Image 1 (cartoon, one colour):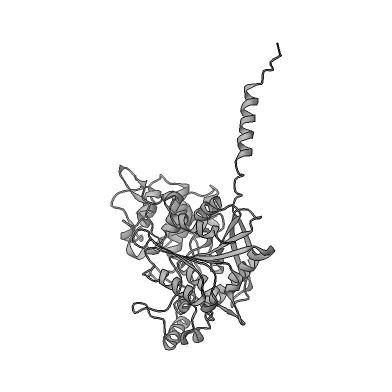
Image 2 (cartoon, rainbow, N blue to C red; image 1 turned 135 degrees about the horizontal axis):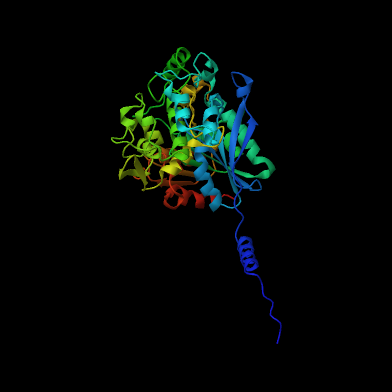
Length: 457
């Protein structure tokens, strides 16, 4: 009788695990942050930098470069980028962190992300000092300290982006340029920009527009005239260089509230909300009962409970729990409060918002006109005139804030340049942030952009 060798049970399990591991694709590497030299723009040279958050394998032969929108930072693409590289072997996703975010002070937030500072300390450092007496608090950047930001318009954004795209193209890689919200406008502006006789589209192999883009003016939102552009520039010279979404005269507060709130929702989710008890928090952001940090955050960002003036950051993520003290949040619909918080909290040193968004960039974005010449462009120094050269494939996803302009603008660009357009209209069912934040299995953007990108050869 042949001799039977007994194999230890642990060895069998180890062999099975090894076999399974060899049969599965290796996990994608963690995201990395690269800092590139930027355009020599007005202001101190220490701000001539652009950061890139890279997802996926460095050996990838195709790169999707994504540009964030108004008052947004590159890390807000993180959950989406993870979903895309998982479904697209051979692709990297590069998220652009514009130079204005170098003005931010993340030191206390970073301590919280490392577990070195509690929620109360973080809140008081960034917000609690307003109207109170908190020594050693955060000191926001003022207009007097950063007058050069009045020059950080579309040209600066395009020139910085050009450095990113050149880096992505090294080694003959294919590059698709995309953007969300204002980032879609910047993407179209890059493609139609005249770089001394050479259109920007020659640097890319496709466009992905996510509830943003550029087209001719409409009756509701006309393209500014030359006289209107001059007036806007004159008002900018005498006013704040920063976009003030809060309307309070403290333009940095919206970004700070989001960065602090999202980090609290992740690092200390079940403690009673500190922000809810803050007397300066707008009443529209306060739930009618005591809630924890994650419920406070979900209440502010969900489409059903968030105020109309926060439509830029809203998403379908669930509802308040029916009971509990403090009340918790129930995930549902398209996403979750944890995923939403990951969108905006970001890694150490960064977050998903922009505290000091340049007003000039928004003003310029209104005059890009889908890449065709206008009188206002000459006043503003814009070179978005090469729409007829845009002959690459175009993908356009329209959500709630597209106002019926994203898909028509993309189709017009396709007609002028000859590029084939893939259009997906979810304006009735997707909030502005849903394409970025929704769970992949329920995200129609992910489901439709993946086949589009697979066709890029």
